[in-house]
Amino acid sequence: MVMTIDIDALSLPVRVRNALKEAGVLTRDDLLKQTVQDLLRVPNLGRKGVAEILVVLGIRANELTLGEMLERERK
Image (cartoon, rainbow, N blue to C red):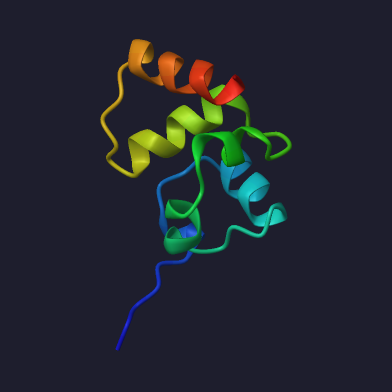
């Protein structure tokens, strides 16, 4: 049996959870399928929200690395 983790079970701020839900990202698996570019397109999420998601998912990224990732996505 595969267990899906609801987005509400993650320790994300309410603003981030609401933005993800509005975009149809309802589970942890849905979230892991998104690229940084996808997440930046989600209304009301922004760079800070993406950074919060990375922290909660345990993706280690310092500001420089995250900034580089975001810069590459813009090109």
